[in-house]
Length: 155
Image 1: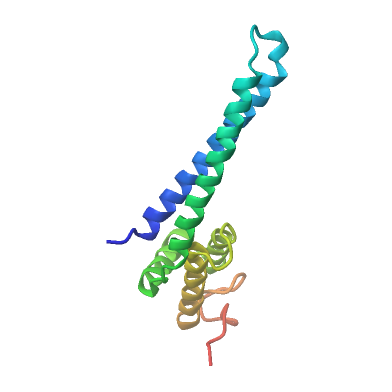
Image 2: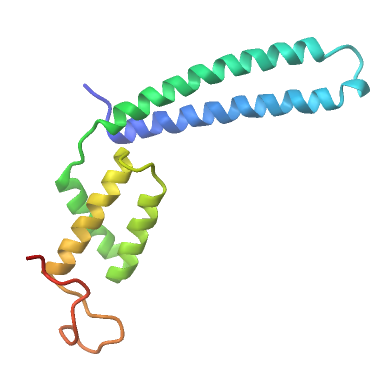
């Protein structure tokens, strides 16, 4: 059984966290090296060894993260899932403008053509299609149906 997009995303986040932890380890070594004259004993060999190990491990963590992200990006977007998500966004975010703004912000957090970027593009497409099929009240207009709809129907 394959991992779900959410499970792969969680693994990718943990890989990124591991990488940050290795970077923090390098920061620690730099801090110790800056204060090495104030410490008893020679910490330089230990610091250099930690740096080497951290740099070696970073390569492997990056490799693992790349493999996880590549597997995630191969997963097709489920149109029913994004249609449902688009409907739910309308319930929680009020106006069509707020929904589009939120979805566009979420999309911009991801690398173009990645799984989550495509997911948010699909949600945006669904939101706009829903708006075409059932136009909302334009901003600054009275009753629904007066004025032009936010989006014109597709031809």
